[in-house]
Length: 539
Ligand code: TEU
Ligand code: CA
Figure: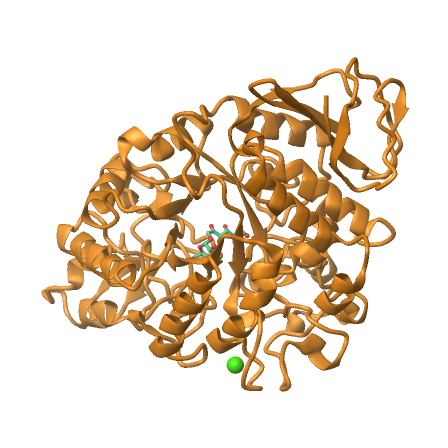
């Protein structure tokens, strides 16, 4: 029997940019509540809500100062309770973002910890002596520079794998672990649907050995966490694990191991960066490699004893239609193609806000237009290292996280209907054309494809449980595969480029299940594909 989260489609909301209700230019919880009917119309089963906890906002909420309070810019705890209830009424569960690799430096624990070396909270964080006035070792922060910051008052360095304002928690401390579980139970008692666990594969870090991901006690911590919180309750968890291989993902998600429901893994998301370098060091995508990675995760993970997620976008990634599709002439076609290709794979699909209407990257001309701490730190670091400003801005335009964070485009009126005030981050000027209102009027739209895919997933068990077989004798820029369950067999074909390659398959199509060319020619022999064409046929 499939679990609810295996049959589900999950929609990610980045609250700061979804819907503002009070004109301060910042999205908020009442704004989300006002859009629940839209989400119910799309058909999604759950919302992954990026952090709404109290936070100074150095990393837009991924720096938490109080896990059991709502940040006033997003509303109140009463608003949060209302959101959980209103969503439940519509059959939608709320998945909370659990950020427990680190806190904000404004969290009470850290304030206590830094106050003196013998404070009981000192050991909640990772403190080390320096080496002759230098950091303890060479560990680097994901947001540039050393992962160690010197605390003058107490004379030691603390670890932060992200910004200096995001000190890492010390998971080796059992009291810290219990404090986290207690906080998780506070949220579970509110009736949430589960947790998305931020950079969870870092909690087993061994700083002295410079081990970040996949530390030796990681899986023990996850088992302990599960037993102390969710237990056998019907909640889902998804861990963000940049360092997962299919074998490691199997460990996390094997139900018999009692760890997580599934993970986010990012192998495909790193294919357009130079090997061994940073995401800013760009490289064109090789479609054959993308295909190979997707196939690897379909075949090397055993979906009968484990699970995976599927996504093209999130709040850290550029928009897929701009990244690997075509956000000009073929915007709608390429967005639909990526949707069909992904939603027919095994694993639970995630949709990031705006993906369902084909929102695109947002181009900036100057660093002054950039808000994200990751991009801003990198800009400073690379400028100092001698990179040209135009090269840095080019990387930011291609890969920067603000691309995904521009306000949701609801209407063609002022600020795209996101806010009556000045939005915290500029609205993409293409909102006059790309917005929800327009989309709902169109007969053929990205939105319709997503809605149809969600409906299909709910109605056709073959999508959740059918086997996967890759088809190899197709052109390199085409991905084609079979899904099969009992006597039923589906063929999925996706042309990933604007070219018009020919496929020649032995099958006879019985009927079209879904496609992005409504008049799709069902012949599969010596069949010329149209630009970004994708279809599913029963064979
Ligand atoms: O992201 C983890 C992470 O490693 C990212 O910083 C990633 O490397 C980068 O964004 C790729 O561009 C999670 C959250 O999703 C992210 O928003 C947070 O900034 C980060 O953790 C720290 O909490
Ligand atoms: Ca607001």
